Each structure stands twice: as structure tokens, then as C-alpha cells.
Amino acid sequence: MDYKKQVALLLMLLSTQVWSFTFNNSVGASFENDEVRVDVSNQTCSQLGITQSELLSLAGEAVNIYWNSVHTSRLELTKGSIVSTSSLFRTDPICSGSLNPCIPNPDLIVPSGILIACNTNAANFASTAVLALTVPNNISGDKLNGALILINDNASNQFAGKSREEKISILAHEIGHAIGLGHSPVDDSLMFHLSIDTRQALGWDDIDGVTYLYPSEQPLGGCGSIENQNSKSGFLIGLLLTFFLGSSIRSFKFQRPRIA
Image 1 (tube, rainbow, N blue to C red):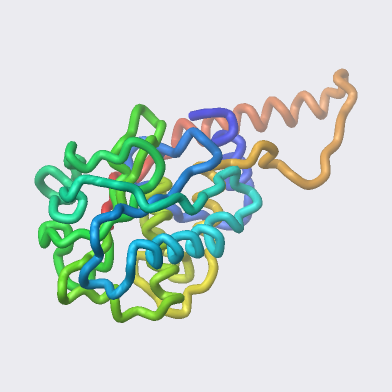
Image 2 (cartoon, one colour):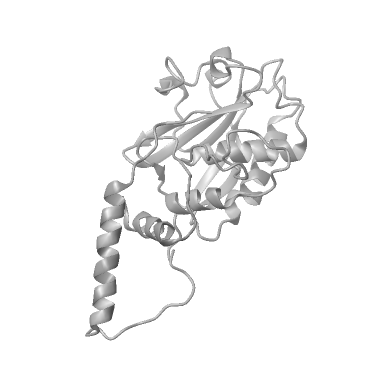
């Protein structure tokens, strides 16, 4: 675990607020670069009633309204472009075998960043209520290289009937999975497992999660102080914090992979 994540975790542990966010991979992987592109596949979305350009526009609004508004996170998601991909992104299953645990389909690996594609494979969507499916499918150690979002483009999909605002929040939810977050049990969080049509902003659990995975350069923020190096009290506080941080990190458990 890197230093920035250690400090972010310490701040959360010292807070009176209980955090509940989870990860959708077993190592808490995150993108290494501060800036991550969100691209859209050029494969047709025949049942969604929107073009690739419109889908890309929705994704751009999703990152700006939600994830790019967190000042304690270094992450900056950017609207990319419509990219040429294999037709397999439209027709293939996202996993080789079962969805949980998911072994990513090697034919759908995303080289870098986040890719959104429309998909018609019934194995990806257990029911019409499943609006989309996301898998970070290119991970090296704890480094996330690429993630794939597939939107249900079957004739009976429920995504097409959603309002523009709902489509934006649905995409923002899936992008949350793409950057490494799992589901939150907190019902006012964007990462809650159900789509809520009144959701218009991140909840505190979403903010805690993205701050942990992508802490800003100076996560302590605010005011600061400096003490005489001979101060025994300063040394004692530092020693206690170091002990507490080490103990907390050793006891910290990652969630099992979550898909949806």
C-alpha cells in the first residue's frame, strides 16, 4: 500500500464518520496516472436510441458532475473519443465463464483507460433490470490499466427508457466500478447497488472511496503547524500515529470482487 493511501486511510480511521465503501477487485487496484480517459466504442448501439456521440456526451457529463467534483482526490477523468474496436465488444461475454468470480475475456481487454461499449450477449445481463456491467479487466499487481463498461443493448433493455439525468447517473455509477470501487451499502451513495432516479450527487461514502483510492497530493489539507524537533510531545504523537497506522493497515481487509 503506497504512502498516500496510508495517509488517506488514517484520516478516515480517525474520523468520527464510519466508512463503508468496497472495492470490485481483491487488491484495491487503482489507475496510476492522475488523468484517465473515458472512450466509447464505435460499435452501434441499436436498441438504446442514442448515437455513439450522444453516449460520449453523457459520459462526459457523468465524470464532470460526479467524480471530478471531489477536491480530496487527485483523479481527473476526461471525455475521450469514439474509438475503433472489434465487433466482439458488442457480442461477446465480458467474462470467460461465470460472472462471479470473473475471469476477464481476453478478447475484450482494454489496453488503457475506460471503454464504454454496447453489448447484446445475454450472458452478461441476467435480466432486463441489469442496465450495465463493468469489469476492470486489465490489472497488474495493484495497478489498474484498463476497464470495460458494457451497456445492455438488448431489445428489452431498460436503459433506453431512462431520463437523461438517470442515464448520466447510471454511467457515473459504472465509471465508479471502472475506477475500482464496488457497491456501497449506503443508500444515498452513487455506488449503492440500485439505480435511484433522484440521485444527483456523490454521497459521503463515494467521496471516501475515491479519496482512498486516489488521494490528493496533500490529503491532510487545511492548516498546518511545525514543532521544535526536541519536543517530546511531538515525538510521542508521531510515534502513536505511526503505531496506529501500522496496526490499522495490517487489520484492513479488502472485499471480494464484485461485479455489476
